[in-house]
View 1 (tube, rainbow, N blue to C red):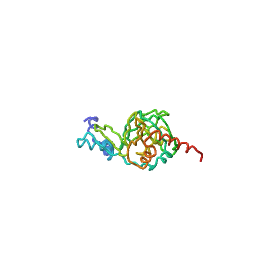
View 2 (tube, rainbow, N blue to C red; view 1 turned 30 degrees about the vertical axis):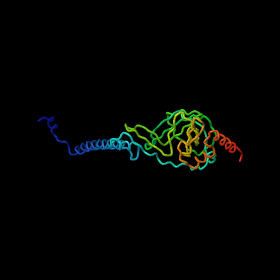
View 3 (cartoon, rainbow, N blue to C red; view 1 turned 120 degrees about the horizontal axis):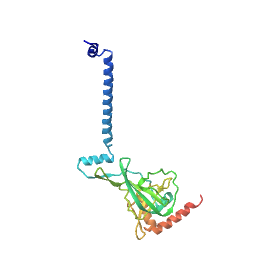
View 4 (spheres, helix red, strand yellow; view 1 turned 90 degrees about the vertical axis):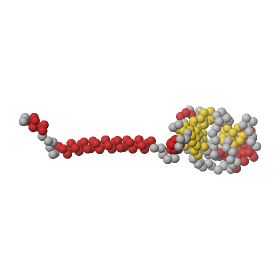
Length: 250
């Protein structure tokens, strides 16, 4: 037999076999781990978080439903018991919404943002402690005579399911309708919180009468009606008097 044939028929040396096996085993183990992590990551990212909008949507689809309604998160509003207190605390302005945008926020809530054009500013109040608010890109830019507010409700179609969030202390606005509202602008002056909740917005009717957007028969709403008799002109006079009072040096 030739030397070449002898070399081909020789078995792998004992010292070589464990190293070859070890390299193959490590390679196989690495591929297995990578595959397992990829599968786990895919399952983890596709599984919606319980309580999220997508979680409710998945539950609705499992039951064959095409629409769902969910309550808005419970909000804590500042307690305002009189018109004088509101005039002493918040901005007061007349404005009309000219654009809106509805989005899912934090995966759990549906909000509707409105960009309002300020028609008349009745009382300005500095609010240095007001935190900044989120401005949807669709509502940018915000001009100096505009401001953005939001409502904790709205409707979106998510994965084919019409998803609606409602709030008994809030209502959606109507574009180009005039409103009297008590906002608390943040430092940028582009976004404002409605910290008075249902007491923060009043509808201005064609006859210049005002009425709460959300009628809760609260102490402030009752006082507004008693102090102004539902008249926008009376509200203007009271606001002007309060602005003059606030302007006096202390």
